Length: 476
Length: 136
Image 1 (cartoon, each protein chain N blue to C red):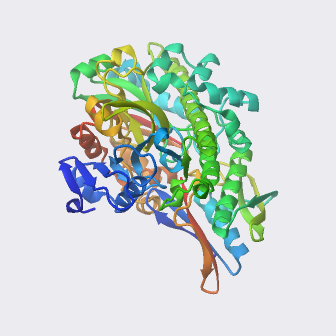
Image 2 (cartoon, rainbow over the protein chains, first blue to last red; image 1 turned 60 degrees about the vertical axis):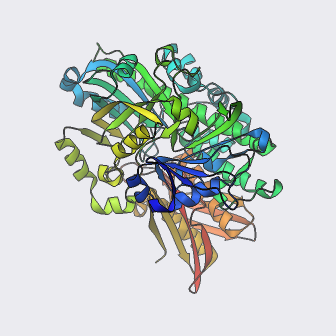
Image 3 (spheres, each protein chain N blue to C red; image 1 turned 30 degrees about the vertical axis):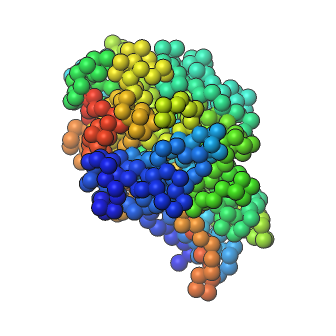
């Protein structure tokens, strides 16, 4: 998009002035270069979201924004139920609460290298991943309801992890308001064999090394030093989340006429928060969040088991677990008034600043860790939320890099085997369940996450703390 | 050409052609599974049936594709042969396939759902086209 076609508020903030049917302006956080590279659909979608009832302050887009279903990916918007605010399936997406969990190992790169291949082989064979994979835990319909209400808390009660883990998950591992009755039987049936599975596509499990520290104080608070080995898992709510997305797209499509909401795009499917349909979707979506949190908790348990079998001296401790693709109820200050808002973050991450109640004690003074994944074979970053970010973006930041080319193009350009060999030449071990899946995920098929992270940093959405590089990757 | 997939940034588009509306829907389903597995290797051994309803043909396509995905996920099956009957607001369909075999079928990506993006069911030349983008 042409930077000159926006109203430039500062080097990292570009505004679409409120006009026509827009209720608020649109605001995109990005460098000039990123704005130039962004597709035109971003403007259109940010503008469409700005027209929705009850929207507060502005319709936002993060530095990694690109077109999505209804909302752009990287879209953030908050709604006030007292002002007829809506809740939208398009603002959450199909993979509800897809997110990243990073764990510390207590080991250094030098200590891990000798048995790394064995570790990766074990992780590949013990953590279910790929199309049609089955989890080790089979749940009955009644147990699924418990899981949907309990999230990671449920998983820990079942023996998958330790209570201490919960402090390092958003909302302590379980969101309020989940209503298993609003989740269809089809969604539940899809999940009963999928607990503790990674999925496919851009989901992964990575062994990483801290290779640069930008903020010593924050790194210390997180217990991170250069050469420390960490493990990150990226996955979501699996079949259940997808089915809730599908079901709600259908059930919300019919509410527009009923509540006389005009939308420019069917995929913005929404209903007033204070309506039966809105409450139903919120209940189902919240259940989806708990499902993703439970899923990542079970995978954490498997990773802990495998890692400590290979390295008995390891101590796996949580760094943090963040989610994208959510709608959360949060208190934010708007024009000096505290308001309870429904904050949609589609392909965007919560990034709470210092002092927020939900944070663990040792992070209170630094802010919430924000884990931004690069793609297979490239760096990922750890940041922290800021007070400024709370003011300008409801405490939100970007989630990753976004694709630079289509999957079809990527497959034409590379063979999975080539990609694996090229990464191995750089010292990164890759194991995947599908070579063509690997080709589609080739590092060059994604945009540069460093640029996106730098823009988030300069826009004060989040502050850089450390960079990690992968040394091994298991792909679904 | 009966079916094809087309590029769409982070996701993939699927397209079915047919002399009739029904054929276009059947071929769109083949396109869908071609995204996930090596469709030529899927033997049409076991039959599953389903019925969906929607207020128009385009929404019916979405219902058809998503219902197939749900069966695939729940039963760990993939399909290669399809037959549908379409009335004004409902579709009764049959799908033939087998349990997913990781080696023979070479699965590589899961489709999360059919979306409204680029959704089109319309006359095309002398026949019909049914297409949409699917979230992978």
